[in-house]
Length: 150
Image 1: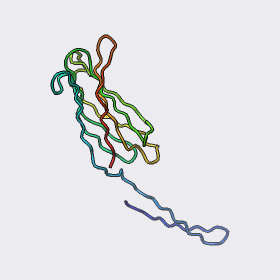
Image 2 (image 1 turned 90 degrees about the horizontal axis):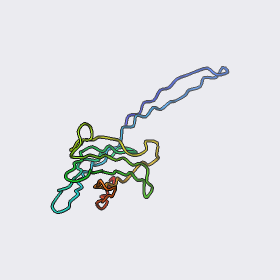
Image 3 (image 1 turned 180 degrees about the vertical axis):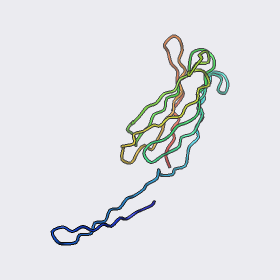
Image 4 (image 1 turned 90 degrees about the vertical axis):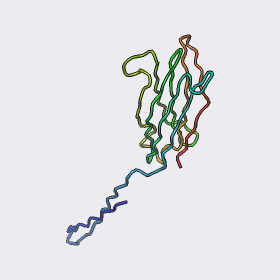
């Protein structure tokens, strides 16, 4: 942390007054990043889709980057939820379909911030769930994969 002190003098009513202003430059805290890998399987490892990537923990938020991939019937959605203790603060989703073209084509890369930069203490957990979306409006999801800030 860098601290800079500036001292100025001014005459107020014939009396010299010294004022000290402290400017603090606080970089984002460094927490160990977490890697994640969540698989949606019907009969074999990751045969229907997956999401993989990294959670970079910042001071009050996190940056999530990686990719989500789909295979087979329907599409796949990765759900990322940020928590401060047991309170849900933010949710981000990324979906892809192996039959799509353009920005939602599979595999789909992503990088996004999650959390609330104004939340004192910030987030301390990101929960990831991977859901297979079928054309019949039904959805089947994996168990939740939790990652905690150290």
